[in-house]
Image (cartoon, rainbow, N blue to C red; front, side):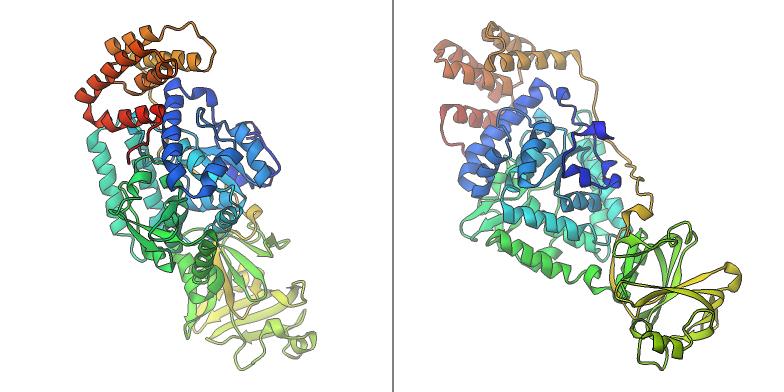
Length: 586
């Protein structure tokens, strides 16, 4: 795995299960066309964004070492990013939301290393290096925003998902891939769009992950900052889209004050956004994030938190008031007076305290699930966790004593106590029994023949969250996607066009000044008459060299392209305007 990325002090702290998403950038795979796409988008963006982006953007471009002329190399980026406490890794397109946010919690940007096709130069639904490298990376040079991003990841990766969330993630990932793939049919794209639309309309009650994903979209991806009358751009989706960055500044897009209501505003990744939210400053983002976090099971716990974990059908954790943490697949809860009185997991389960697995209580010991009462003993106001050694002795909660503990709500635990475990504050957090029977009314929850019964101690569930307490308790190297980014074999015609782009790039970089640009133009006119970007690059060189005849010949060809392909007209005009130092029209 170490050969996939150049490590540094930040990346060394990355847990193993996140490394499964990392792939090599393979910088040499970028063609001269890819480099030209990057250069065009960046030059146009910097020209336009200098007027409408938050000041941190242009400052961040310099600070993060991102060049307008060259696709960023991950190795070079990391050497510079480490100075502001961050790092970057390459991934293949969309990754699961929990993993994406967990990377952020470790101060690591995940960068989809592929780049959009020339045909999708203005916008692509697939994450690409323009979106990640030119959108996300520069703005994190702002310390307040960088801390918001880290904190968002820290809280977001604990958000509980629903089973439908993962289905939607896979559908969106597939749609983004085929929309960017050059050989996709309109029928396949329409079918994928229909599936995403259907899932979005049939998600049921939104999960925590769905809600916090909305906040992420309206801030990190599509956020505006300042006043409603004169907002500036800071969201990466806008910073990296030469179409939407201009569109969002028009009156066609409604500007709303950013508040907790954005949590419930859904979005469509396939269309321009009809409204955007404006935060007065970066500090305000953190206030709203904390307001949302206060509604999460992470901080509320209780019966609702357990039910969220059951509905998620995924690995999760509850934390009891003693600090004991139970991680597993929760499948049942018994409630009484709207409080949980017994919880049950199925399959591998682990117990932990302060994110560290309790010795002897990992998934080998609890391979078939774990069940335990929660709450106070019936008729006794003092909870077990609050009892002193003398209190425990008085209630026969003592080694080698046979006892029946009846909890509020009707759970009974009868057996011989073997031993107990205490936390650092001296509170008992776990009691082990032999010859134990656990019942709820007439239902038997545990039988003596099943072996030792470990009873968790806690009067309430104070937290419930996605994932395990101790990352080392479970095998988390399980990521498999149903779709991968499409890389088709290049045709001879495409390779020939790439070679022409490379010649012009070599000429501009001073690698080979003997190249005849007139011959390159002639070959374009003859064999690639609809390619518009390379003629724009040729025009730049001729314009800077004051080569009037060549300029006129190129402009004549570009006019021909605009006649045959009107959709390229604005792209051509904007490229020429940048070269001539004129304002790019929005």
